[in-house]
Length: 261
Image 1: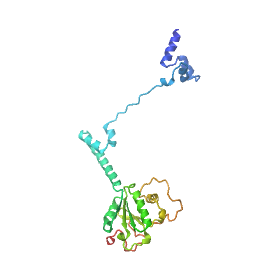
Image 2: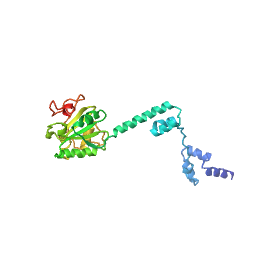
Image 3: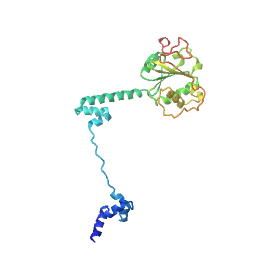
Image 4: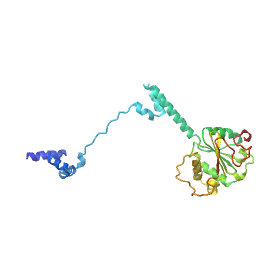
C-alpha cells in the first residue's frame, strides 16, 4: 500500500517513478506515454519558462525617438545633453530630406521666363522632368496623362510642361513630344517623340520604366512593360555631365542659356 501511495503521489504531480525514468532513458517508453497511461495530459506538465526581462534605458530608445519625444527629454533635463542634441540634429536632417523627397506631386506648366529658375536652378536639388508639347498632338496628350499619374507617385521629381515654341523658338513639331531631364544644373537625358515608349499606345508604366532605367525614379515594376525587341528601345540621347549639345538642336539652341529664355 505504501508503494501504491508513493506511485500515486508521483502521478498526481506529473512526475515519473525511478523505474519509469529507467524505461524512458533506455528508449523503451517516453514520458508522454507514461503520463498518458496515468490519465494525464502531457501538455499540462510542460515546463513554462518566463521570458527574460530586458532592461531598456533612455539611451537605448534615443535612436528611435521622434523630434517631439527628443524635445520632451530636453525639458526633463536629460543628463547627456550632447547625445540628445546629436540625435535631435539627426532627426531634423532626416525630416528635411523627407520633405525634399515629397515636395512636388503635381505637373506644373511654366513659361519661357521661368526656365532658369524652375528648371536649371531647381535641378541642383532634384531631377526635373520637362515636357515640350503642342496641344494638337495626341502623343503630347498621352504624355500629359502619364505625367499626371507619375507626379503624385514620385514626389521627389519635379514634373513640368511648357509649350515647345515657348521653350525653343521654331522647335520642329516632328520632335514632339520632347522630354528633357535635368539634374545638377545640366541636361542629363532627352527623348525626341515617344516612339521609344510605345508611341500612341504608351502608358504611364512605359514612362515609369524608362525613368527607372535612367535612375531618375525607383520603380516596383519587375520588368519592362514592353516586350523585348520593341522598336526604338534606345532612341534617346544621354547628355554628358558637362551639358553637351542635344541632338537636333542648332549650335545656338542651348536650352539652358540666357539667350533662349
